Length: 342
Image 1 (cartoon, rainbow, N blue to C red):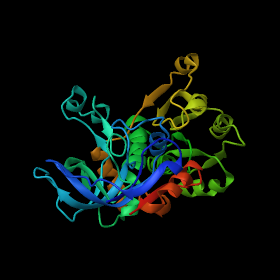
Image 2: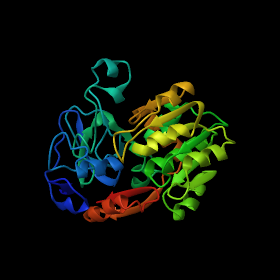
Image 3: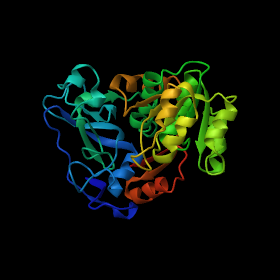
Image 4: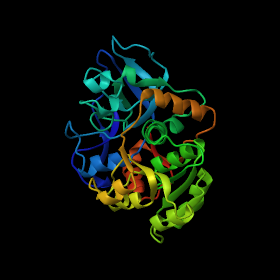
């Protein structure tokens, strides 16, 4: 098969488009012919070496995949060749104490498609049959590829972790990202008022169309002061934070008393400072989360089919142009998800 992969760490120039070993379905696995694969920030961390692929190099990125079942292992259940599917990207052992409690996202052997295993920057990808859900005919491969990581993680963060309720105020960092564009919609679906940040003025109207009431260019305005002004000096109830570093620290100052910060990523750095006196004196909650469940992915699919959530696609690149697609994301030019299509 053809794939976009890398043999050494660095920038987009390290991505090669060439022949790559075909995946083979083991007993309970399936091979999916990729319809579309979405790019994510974790792909950039894998590429530049901040998060080296656990199985080493060469490596194929790509966590969010839709496609058609090409082949099935002899013990694969619940799927058939030719079926349109969406791939849940999280792998778990099913046997550790956390899996047995139903908390598979903190499995002691947890991993991701496209990180711990070769992913969807390819014509074919392998995944456990248990990780597949039928992709409704109403959802295209492109639209579906925007869901399994960005939309699902945002859903889990706001609904399961933050328990956002009608009338609350939510600050979503980075509206132009896949997570940001999804989280704005989900917060609005929950009945919340939404403020968001962007890195350039040309993304302001984009964020407003998604449902953000107040949009701040963080390069020209202090988002903490803007959050306080917008909320009547109170501070916001919830922050969805996925940048890390100074943004993580400053986001805590945007919260009201008893507020919740959900952290679901750290693109700038894995380190973030905290003023502990500020945290305990205001009784703040700092919550981490790293995906969601396959049941929640089905709920997201249902909302998309019903038109209550809309996958936001910035641009689709041919697989052979993976370098250009990655550079587009690295340059922060995207407004929503960037896709690769074989």
